[in-house]
Length: 265
Image (cartoon, rainbow, N blue to C red; front, top):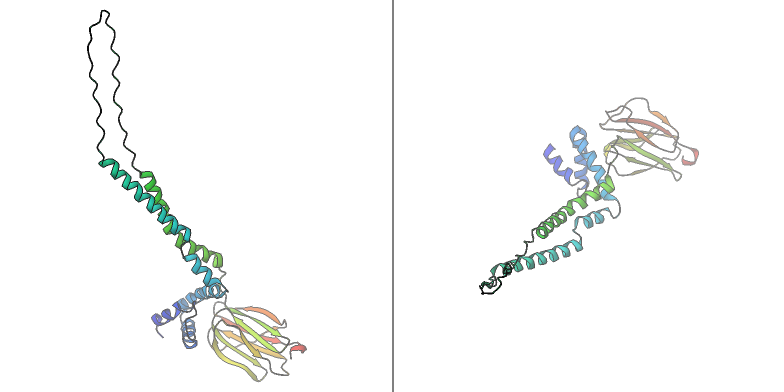
């Protein structure tokens, strides 16, 4: 598979749109390409967020602009149109004629100072609603920014600082005789009990795997690696549950021997 084909499959991994065959092909390509493997690890964090119950619905609801913002935008647009119409009407109305005052000179035995003429009052034109228009534009810009800000807030809520994904797996042995393994990243897994093969070496994803423990088994050898074939002496484990990480970083190799309690044999 080419890198371009793998990247196309990578786009549908987090949203769960891939078939089982496509997922297996994507895991195989990631094991052979370190850059693609790192991108797949990042997509895994997003997949776990979207797989949480109700996460998709909350994200969709956050991306929709609130109803009150839409109603407010229509109201603001109506007020702005009314103001513009008022300004046009006032500018087209001719100003009223100002009556001229004519000073009359009258003869009087005792001349008196004529009162100072009162200047005509000027009609002040209404101020242009620049402030209201600017405020409306600013509020509209904030409404336009609300959608990406809401989406970013949802992503920060569910995955603000996701922990780094470490190569490894969690395991647990149940009293009813089953072994459960959940890998943190895709890899090759095998489980054996003495000479019996419980699970042959195969490429697995990050889903929880459940195996029946053979009757009479006293221990299980679990191998997990980025590439097939793990050699060496397995590390002893006695706890029925635990978490294992890369024993040979950054090569991605884990080999343990899990000793079983009598109750689980």
